[in-house]
Image (cartoon, rainbow, N blue to C red; front, side, top):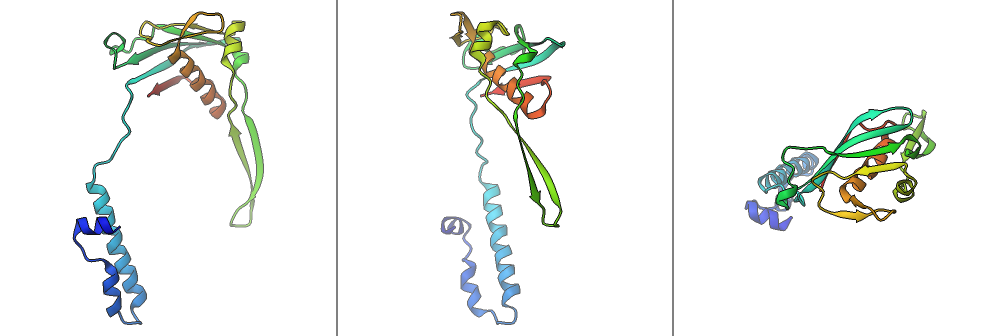
Length: 191
């Protein structure tokens, strides 16, 4: 706080407390606190807000079709650091097919909590579980067709080259399913 007070050039309010009568001490302390708070807020607003910098790559997927057996997504990836992978037209030419039995339910924790009013309330938490994608890829329950703008290929369980952004989108699809209980319509990742 000493650095901020020096920047604003306002004497600290502690020196003013000595001259306050005992009768009005609580209201004067409150006023001094509010004055100090307003100067702190002004100094925070004047500084530039620091935003984390993007690494410049990401991906997005849209639900195309869903039936009782499987779900089909189209996906696209981009990397603004590589000119051939910028994907400025938002082309979605890759596909991800997932069997419905790959979607697992989250762990559900329930507890009864006593509220301040005295009433009891049931609290339900949905805790997502990790989905192991590699065995499902090997068994053919998940099929990935790479998009044209992929830049980093990983090796799948059957030694095929698979877009790493498709893996990230799969994790995001499974996570959002476990949080909401529905197959997500849109999924996006920006790194």
